Length: 375
Image 1: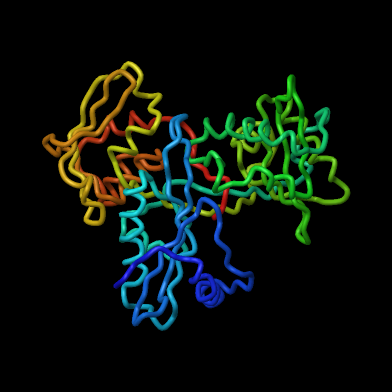
Image 2: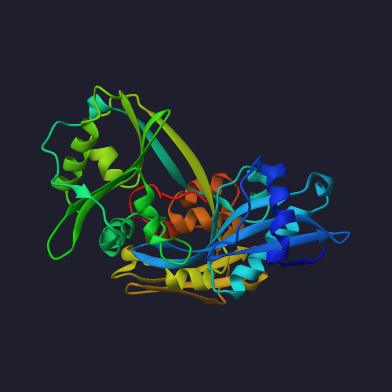
């Protein structure tokens, strides 16, 4: 089955394919930082997917990541291996371009699991009653202007670098100016052009949807929360995207029961040595040890087989060799790398054999891996 890159000539048939697959009526346009792959059958476009150029924060460092989206197969071509062929080609393409990880939101998890992706984090919204927001002084905020864009991004990255899984929102996949299109963009300024925090939100028929509530300190967070509280009397609740778990988990007063909407995302380690080399490993400080692995991965043979994970005083690398004492299925690599699942859960799921205690220790940072962007 021929697999090739999408070209501008494919935009019209791709738009028809998206209308059939997703019910979209908006025209398909080429996006900066995104490339596409097309599958052909009988000389016709049978399926396609998009790969966005992302970087995810892991252990405080960014790892090049391919964000998979728009996976669609024309109804006449379904059941003929089109989606599987596209994913196999995407793995090779991402590896060749240095994208050591891949992340996606799966509507058909079985398909992606068959190719090594596995649940590794959440995109979460909290339905928040305004009376659960603590009373406090509002922040000295003002509307954002174009001159704030670099400082806004720096403020976001200051938070995102401490939450495993978050994207760095770098160009060209993200346009900094898009934030100014939000209905609410409140900035708490600091010194010399610094931004202490900001709030972005949209008002729609269902109420107020908070996209980002980001702050460098507790006082700024509480001040921005007070700005949300000012909607009391107009609205009873707001939907808050959980960007900073400290905001919703430690500073607000939700009761024993609360409503969340969570979208699980799946992670795939495309190139284990490259992913390990790029990741930050705070728990490896002062640790010197090795773990002999056997990686079982029929769709990424370049990192399959016996590998040795070497830990030397804060630095971690993967090299060929070893005795294969710990056997890891391709699907185990994502949730292990993210810290979403420990070796005991992976073993019970049939994805790991052997003693995984050192693996658990290496990724032992607290917190649930998160994304704050949908694609």
